[in-house]
Length: 191
Image 1 (cartoon, helix red, strand yellow):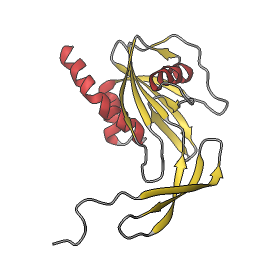
Image 2 (cartoon, rainbow, N blue to C red):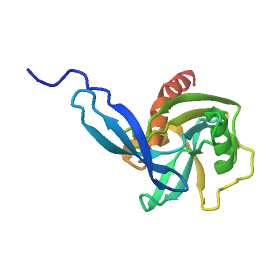
Image 3 (cartoon, rainbow, N blue to C red):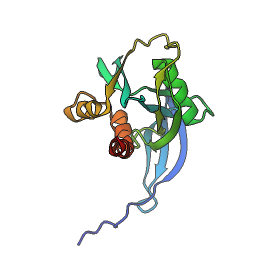
């Protein structure tokens, strides 16, 4: 029999101090105390804004994908469109804005698929996953100064094949495809 409790203790949060501030996130040292052992530790937390990723489905059942250079991995990455949510901005509105800015696509129907925590061990933000159906290219691209994006559409099943083969490796994109899967199964059943 294990001497460990069946459920972990909830650490008690104390104060924090700034460790670093950057253009895209802040790094905090956050104090926590363990309620049973009475030990205190400082943990590093990345204080980041919320993000949005968009699954954009065209009327002919293709998904809008973007390919762009990612500095964290020093490689190109195939992804669904996405970006940072502005303070106070609704995630669905942010999804529509980011989709139009990055790809020029807009849609006829939009809803929140779900929300995930990108990495709860060190990040305090949420990534919202938005579904836009009836997506067509109607807008002029409005890239950020450092963005250069290849935009394409692929049949949905081909996108899933890319994900399963390792051609799509962005974890938040895989989350979006996972949450879109029930809707895709529903649409395939209707065809």
